[in-house]
Image (cartoon, rainbow, N blue to C red; front, side):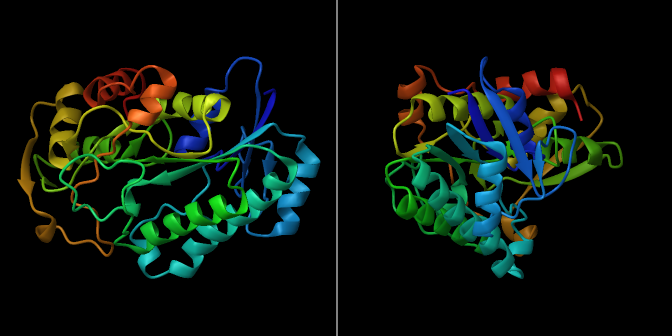
Length: 292
């Protein structure tokens, strides 16, 4: 596999995918936005003609990692049609085009396809029931990709991402800690904080060695947003800021979040021979190298 297309390449995850491309692989980044690492800017993936132009101009490709998405969770509640264009239409058109060429596709998806009512980590075959427009459009994108390219689509659901680029929760907490001496953070939503430094290599492994189907990929363990905030400040050496827990109802948002969305990553672990790093160790490694 010598040439791979990475969509959403200027984003938090896409940029890390470019940096972590395996030796001998040329990762070609595309994004609507231009950037230093973007070889192919300006291609609207919801437009089939533009998808064909992208593949013709910058291919041939032996694989695609589709990280481009509408990820503004709350904004999707009022602009669901736009979110659907990015998360469903673009995914469908890309999957159709690569299916015609026999190219494997890795689609990055989300824990928001679940409703959060589970009592144990969500398995890849558990019932999906999204609570938000974002979750609905991401699930519809999964279904569109599998319908268009059933033999070649690998769906990888992940959650609670942070990384060297882009806005993320640990960065927000550290920024607020410079302005306030007390923070209130939701404690009744539980997931697995996941570093792109851990996720990106796993996505490359799924592309190279995985079979079609669904995978879950998140750092090992679980935490609430409150626990993640406390750990972020502790690992960053911030000792003069107090963090208090609060409930979701005390911090309302336009989009409903799953209260519990820990993912069972056993299929990915079996493929790679190891899990992603424990979430606290991954956070420590990230802050040591890339403190926001």
